[in-house]
Image (cartoon, rainbow, N blue to C red; front, side, top):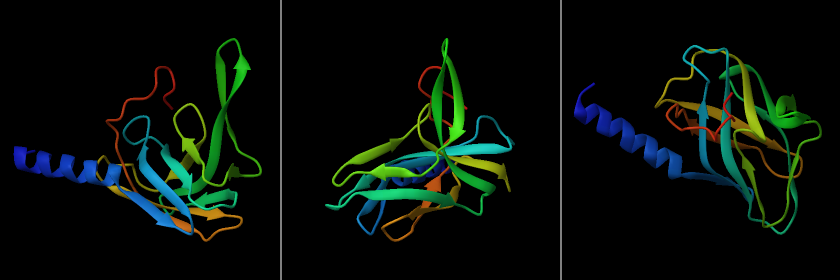
Length: 154
Protein backbone atom coordinates (compact mmCIF):
# COMPACT_ATOMS: atom_id res chain seq x y z
CA UNK A 1 0.00 0.00 0.00
CA UNK A 2 1.38 3.41 -0.91
CA UNK A 3 2.05 6.12 1.63
CA UNK A 4 -0.81 8.17 0.19
CA UNK A 5 -3.27 5.26 0.52
CA UNK A 6 -2.09 4.45 4.04
CA UNK A 7 -2.39 8.10 5.10
CA UNK A 8 -5.91 8.35 3.66
CA UNK A 9 -6.99 5.17 5.48
CA UNK A 10 -5.55 6.37 8.79
CA UNK A 11 -7.15 9.80 8.40
CA UNK A 12 -10.54 8.29 7.58
CA UNK A 13 -10.34 5.90 10.54
CA UNK A 14 -9.37 8.67 12.96
CA UNK A 15 -12.26 10.87 11.79
CA UNK A 16 -14.71 7.98 12.16
CA UNK A 17 -13.38 7.06 15.61
CA UNK A 18 -13.83 10.56 16.97
CA UNK A 19 -17.23 11.15 15.40
CA UNK A 20 -20.43 10.63 17.29
CA UNK A 21 -23.92 9.54 16.30
CA UNK A 22 -26.83 11.25 18.01
CA UNK A 23 -30.60 10.70 18.02
CA UNK A 24 -33.43 10.88 20.52
CA UNK A 25 -31.19 12.04 23.35
CA UNK A 26 -28.69 9.19 22.97
CA UNK A 27 -25.18 9.79 21.70
CA UNK A 28 -22.90 6.96 20.59
CA UNK A 29 -19.30 8.12 20.79
CA UNK A 30 -15.92 6.61 19.83
CA UNK A 31 -17.43 3.37 18.49
CA UNK A 32 -15.29 0.68 16.91
CA UNK A 33 -15.63 -3.00 16.02
CA UNK A 34 -13.09 -5.78 15.73
CA UNK A 35 -12.66 -9.52 15.66
CA UNK A 36 -10.02 -11.42 17.61
CA UNK A 37 -8.30 -12.55 14.42
CA UNK A 38 -8.82 -12.33 10.64
CA UNK A 39 -11.71 -14.49 9.39
CA UNK A 40 -12.97 -15.14 12.93
CA UNK A 41 -16.66 -16.16 13.07
CA UNK A 42 -17.36 -13.59 15.79
CA UNK A 43 -16.62 -9.97 16.50
CA UNK A 44 -17.52 -7.29 18.99
CA UNK A 45 -18.25 -3.57 19.03
CA UNK A 46 -17.36 -1.11 21.76
CA UNK A 47 -18.40 2.50 22.39
CA UNK A 48 -19.61 5.04 24.90
CA UNK A 49 -23.39 5.50 25.15
CA UNK A 50 -24.39 8.91 26.49
CA UNK A 51 -27.89 9.83 27.65
CA UNK A 52 -28.28 13.59 27.16
CA UNK A 53 -31.88 13.67 28.40
CA UNK A 54 -33.36 14.12 31.87
CA UNK A 55 -35.01 10.67 31.66
CA UNK A 56 -33.47 7.25 32.16
CA UNK A 57 -33.26 5.31 28.87
CA UNK A 58 -32.99 1.54 28.54
CA UNK A 59 -31.02 -0.18 25.77
CA UNK A 60 -32.93 -3.42 25.14
CA UNK A 61 -31.31 -4.82 22.01
CA UNK A 62 -29.04 -4.47 19.00
CA UNK A 63 -29.24 -5.66 15.43
CA UNK A 64 -26.97 -5.67 12.39
CA UNK A 65 -26.83 -7.23 8.95
CA UNK A 66 -23.13 -7.90 9.64
CA UNK A 67 -23.93 -11.07 11.64
CA UNK A 68 -26.54 -13.77 12.02
CA UNK A 69 -26.95 -12.98 15.75
CA UNK A 70 -26.24 -9.74 17.57
CA UNK A 71 -26.54 -9.54 21.35
CA UNK A 72 -25.65 -7.38 24.31
CA UNK A 73 -22.94 -9.23 26.27
CA UNK A 74 -20.92 -8.76 29.42
CA UNK A 75 -18.19 -10.57 31.35
CA UNK A 76 -18.78 -11.98 34.82
CA UNK A 77 -16.19 -13.08 37.35
CA UNK A 78 -16.38 -16.85 37.95
CA UNK A 79 -13.69 -16.91 40.64
CA UNK A 80 -9.96 -17.61 40.58
CA UNK A 81 -9.46 -14.99 37.87
CA UNK A 82 -11.76 -16.75 35.39
CA UNK A 83 -14.09 -14.51 33.38
CA UNK A 84 -17.12 -15.80 31.48
CA UNK A 85 -18.90 -13.95 28.69
CA UNK A 86 -22.69 -14.03 28.91
CA UNK A 87 -25.70 -12.38 27.30
CA UNK A 88 -27.21 -9.44 29.21
CA UNK A 89 -30.80 -10.18 30.14
CA UNK A 90 -33.21 -7.27 30.53
CA UNK A 91 -31.13 -4.60 28.82
CA UNK A 92 -28.86 -1.83 30.04
CA UNK A 93 -30.17 1.25 31.86
CA UNK A 94 -28.48 4.50 30.89
CA UNK A 95 -29.36 6.98 33.60
CA UNK A 96 -30.43 10.54 32.78
CA UNK A 97 -27.41 12.70 32.01
CA UNK A 98 -25.03 9.74 32.45
CA UNK A 99 -22.84 7.56 30.21
CA UNK A 100 -22.38 3.82 29.90
CA UNK A 101 -19.11 2.45 28.56
CA UNK A 102 -19.26 -0.60 26.30
CA UNK A 103 -15.70 -1.94 26.52
CA UNK A 104 -13.56 -5.04 26.34
CA UNK A 105 -13.85 -7.10 29.46
CA UNK A 106 -17.22 -5.49 30.22
CA UNK A 107 -20.49 -4.79 28.46
CA UNK A 108 -20.25 -4.88 24.65
CA UNK A 109 -22.11 -5.68 21.43
CA UNK A 110 -21.40 -9.29 20.39
CA UNK A 111 -21.55 -10.20 16.69
CA UNK A 112 -21.96 -13.95 16.19
CA UNK A 113 -21.90 -15.74 12.86
CA UNK A 114 -20.36 -12.89 10.90
CA UNK A 115 -21.68 -12.77 7.33
CA UNK A 116 -18.30 -11.44 6.12
CA UNK A 117 -14.99 -10.94 7.90
CA UNK A 118 -14.53 -7.64 9.72
CA UNK A 119 -12.03 -5.77 7.55
CA UNK A 120 -9.90 -3.06 9.09
CA UNK A 121 -10.93 0.37 7.79
CA UNK A 122 -14.43 -0.68 6.66
CA UNK A 123 -17.63 0.01 8.59
CA UNK A 124 -20.58 -2.04 9.81
CA UNK A 125 -24.06 -0.74 10.49
CA UNK A 126 -25.46 -1.44 13.97
CA UNK A 127 -28.91 -0.43 15.20
CA UNK A 128 -29.46 0.16 18.92
CA UNK A 129 -32.99 -0.55 20.15
CA UNK A 130 -34.30 1.35 23.17
CA UNK A 131 -37.33 0.68 25.34
CA UNK A 132 -38.25 4.34 25.69
CA UNK A 133 -36.40 6.12 22.86
CA UNK A 134 -36.15 5.87 19.09
CA UNK A 135 -33.84 3.29 17.51
CA UNK A 136 -30.42 4.64 16.58
CA UNK A 137 -28.41 3.27 13.64
CA UNK A 138 -24.66 3.87 13.74
CA UNK A 139 -21.95 3.21 11.16
CA UNK A 140 -19.15 1.68 13.23
CA UNK A 141 -15.60 1.56 11.86
CA UNK A 142 -13.65 -1.68 12.07
CA UNK A 143 -10.39 -0.97 13.90
CA UNK A 144 -8.32 -4.09 14.43
CA UNK A 145 -5.31 -2.06 15.60
CA UNK A 146 -6.76 -0.95 18.94
CA UNK A 147 -5.06 -2.76 21.78
CA UNK A 148 -7.19 -4.40 24.48
CA UNK A 149 -6.83 -3.80 28.16
CA UNK A 150 -4.32 -6.34 29.45
CA UNK A 151 -5.91 -9.81 29.51
CA UNK A 152 -9.29 -8.59 28.23
CA UNK A 153 -9.29 -9.49 24.52
CA UNK A 154 -11.87 -11.75 22.86
